[in-house]
Image (cartoon, rainbow, N blue to C red; front, side):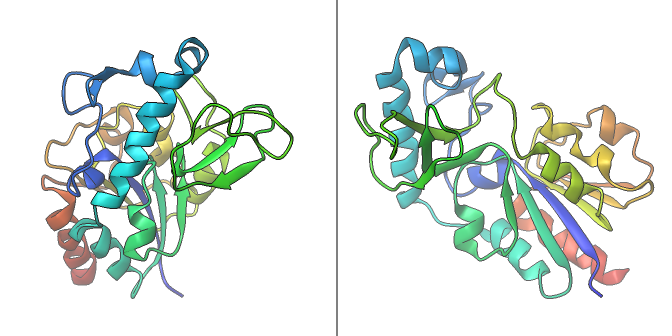
Length: 231
C-alpha cells in the first residue's frame, strides 16, 4: 500500500506561475486592501467593486499555466497516495493533473448563491449584478472571505490525521486555521516545509521530525521527492 502524503499548498506555488498574492506587496492584492475586496462587509458595501476584482482574478487564470512545482506534485503520485489541501483559489493543481485536491478557500472558477450556500456553479465568464441562482438570488464568488467560516476545514483536518508524510509548499503559514493543519497529523509524522522564505509558526517549531527546504516550489518539491526516495 502506498504511503499517504498530505500536501498543504499556499500562494507561493501559484506566484511562480505569475499569479500575484496579497502578501507580495505590503498587504495589497492588485493594489487593493483586503478589507475592500475580501470580506463580507466589502461585498455589502460595494458589490460592484468586489465582482470586478474577482472577474479580473478569474480572467488572469487564462494567462497562466502550472509550473514545475505543480508538476512535481503530480509526479509524486507514481509512488505515493497524494492528497492536496490548497489555500489557493486558482485551478492550477487541477490543470497540472493532480488527482485529489481539496480547496479550503473556494475557487475562482465557481460561484454560489448568496442565500443558499449549497448552490454552487462552475463559472468561466464575468459575474455581474443580476446573475442569479436557480432560486432567484444574486450569485457571489465562491470564495471564503476573511472572517467567514471555512466549511472544508473539518474534512481537511480528517485528511491530515491520516498522513504518513506531511508536505507544506509555498505558504507563509500566517493564515489560520489552515496554518494549524499539521497539528492534526499523527505524532512523529515526517514533515517537509518548502518555501524560499520559510517562517516557522508555533506548530512547526514544536514538530520533532521537520525538514526545512529553503527553495521555491519549482525546485523544492523535487528535492523532497529525492529525500523520500533515499529513505
